[in-house]
Image (tube, rainbow, N blue to C red; front, side, top):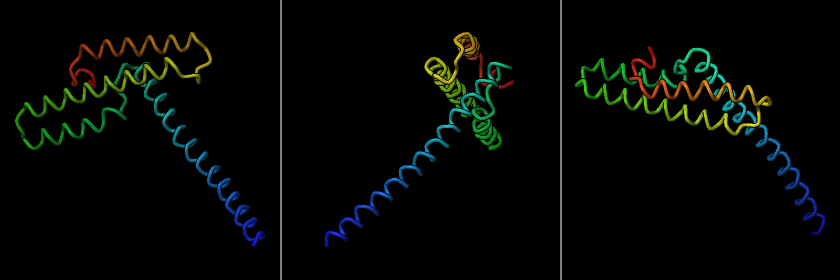
Length: 134
């Protein structure tokens, strides 16, 4: 009886080790993808002042669908404002990420990126959706 209990404990321990290793790999993969997307988006903004395609494309599809349906113009205007606000919100998240990330070793680079992202936020805050993506 004691032998079966010991065998059960060993099997459970091995299973827990493998599950933990698997979860660490999965979390690393998803975390790495998330950070990679943030850095690609920041490059798009800092290099051209443009809304990243990852942010703009879903909204452009929705707006296009509404405009094709010949729905009243106010629906399109409202959707464009939601898109503008969403992009501003995502830009603020990106700014917060760069304020606290430890991935960037050089403080001068961090300050330069933050300066450009904040300038983009101030610029976009004054623009309409069409001006932001244009």
